[in-house]
Image (cartoon, rainbow, N blue to C red):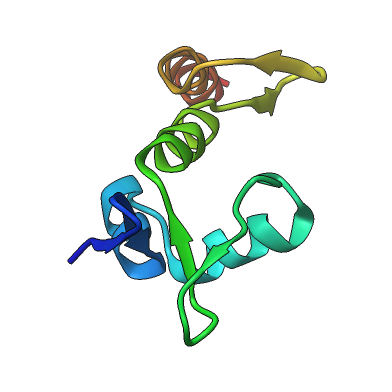
Length: 95
């Protein structure tokens, strides 16, 4: 359930993880690495609070998929990677 402080709506860590589809450990690891530096709102217990704008920033960051396949080639989307992976699997069956 969102928290309203000074007429602004904030979301707790568990809600953010559920909305984005990541684990709490993943979110905390990213925060420790400094991937999202503007997350500094906390409630009276010291728990982090996130705005919708911050959640959207995290969602955008997490939807970017980068994978290295083959000879150091980088693929930017999961769809392309899965197509390349299917080709790799198919070619290995033929060998």
